[in-house]
Amino acid sequence: MHTRFNVAIVGLMSAMLSSSVALAQESKAAFGPGEQSLYRVQYLGVTAGTAQITVGAPMKQWGEQVWPIVSLAKSDPVIGVWPIKDKFVSYWNDAAQRSLGSDFFVDENNKRRRQRVQLKEAGRVAHVVRQREGAAPTEATHELPEGSMDLASATFALRNRGIADGQEYTYPVFTGSKSFMLRATVDGRQRMKTALGEREVFRVKLQTQFSEKLQARRDIIAYFTTDPSHVPVRVEADLALGSIVAELAEYKQGRLMAMND
Image (cartoon, rainbow, N blue to C red; front, side, top):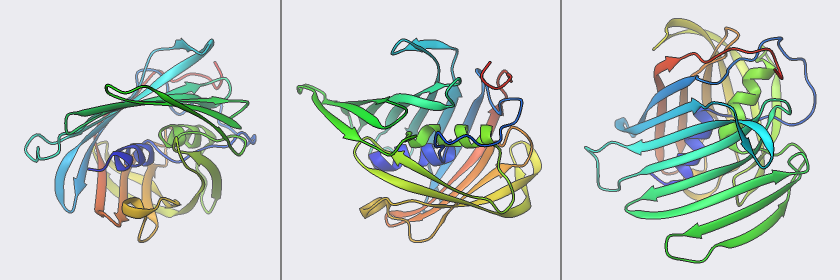
């Protein structure tokens, strides 16, 4: 699997995104510390690996209280021709309902690198530090649309906002090098067999602006449960590099808290 694909698919499974514009919110958060989701990822119909997403215990980052949202992507050892073990951590500020930044630890084909993004001024400025193993770090600053956030914190913001029939959402996304607008449209409900049992789910169409191997041939489709937790249970993507399906295999609910508790 491709490095940027790992970030994108984890983000889309975990995924979509929120801006800082205030919308109606539920009294209870849809997720909380301790939530854990395990997804099996298929590439061209073959199991290619797993992605595990965990909401960690509260901690301090850049002087503020955050919940670390930790995404681990691993390739299947049976495939093994290009071993992958990536870790992406988004620092979720529950009070502000947005991510303050992220750390991305890449370990692919025995080559390692790291990227840190700190989002400042309500997501309008990003300070990015990149470093390859054995090389000196490089730094860059990017000006962004207000409310910009990483993809991996997207679903979490959307889940807290609630998902409504027929609604369309447009949000600014920053990948660490590229900024674009993500469009999400709720395209109805259906019944689906999931790891949680048979559930009613929202079908959500996603339009991204990735290029090259990650360019989508058609809308990416994500499915979220219609209950207050809005758990993402499946993602289907037909990209230039091939078709991808990520499906929920295991789920553990976290500690549900009042909004901004």
